[in-house]
Length: 431
Image (tube, rainbow, N blue to C red; front, side, top):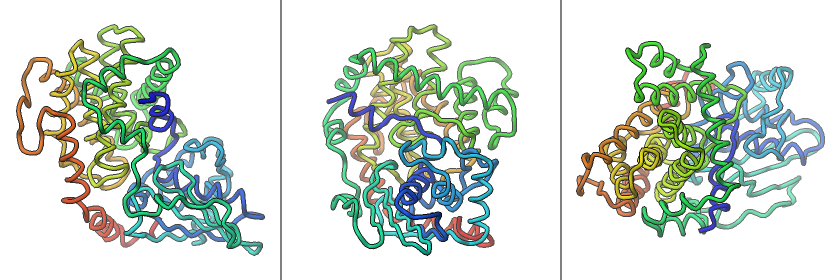
């Protein structure tokens, strides 16, 4: 498999929760084709995009939340050429203008329950015309552009299906086993090694910001740090992971290195491995290989479950990646890494995703801790050693079962979840 292609598509810097970022990217792209500023914005979102963008903080806005704010900000001040960093350069003045547009009820949102997991259709209108832009299958994939009724960018027919297509490189990844992933992680060239270390620097920097104080999110990381009776490794892993998520979900204008299209996946996949590497004094090369394995296993699980899922991928997929990466960082072998993944999945498989928000810090912190515990059990040849329930030590068969669980057993979970979320917030307008 082409490792450069995998990391180019699956691991990249992202500022803000990637679902509202996809919304902002769609409106920013539309704005480049519209003459003058938009007077109205219409969003049609998939269940997953709506769910994950509804209550999450938007970077650099001082605490504003939701898809409508992201849409207005992208249209008025976003830079579509920056991809997932589309809102990198917004100013307080831009935020004020976006808020005024939302407050004037000029941004509408509806949900298309039949759209694939990643689907944003944004239409911008003013007196001079109308532009429609769709982002589909990946958070940074501009799939369609229609300007005043004329199609400028034709949609890929595969993007229009109920189930998003799996890229060829992920299909190749699905055909592999743990031995292949282990070998790939050890084959990094200098460029990819530096890229892995850059991700560590970014994500640990986010965590350190959360641990330095301040009212970030639910203060998951800072609370763990403040009340730990001793400076044990487990508390540090949970605290760092929780703190990074606290800061990110609050909408801090700072990027993390994402994994499988999600910044929180990136936090879970990278930080536990980085904390252990720092504690054990690993070399840069050893750290890079362990992080690479974490990303590869995360991508492997997501290739089976889909990009956006009813289960919490930050905990389940990235937690599995972290468990494998931790085994490598702690000197284990590929068989132990596979058993660590089985332990993690046995523990967290049923954790549901009810949207991106402050409480994601609790889930990410819990997953980071479980990944470490799973790695320790695997290193001691304990934990899951045989088939139990849906989980077996064989990575491929377990991920195939998990994929069926997401697409078949949980097929209607997101639809019900969105209905419940709307009822919970019925006093508020849809963001």
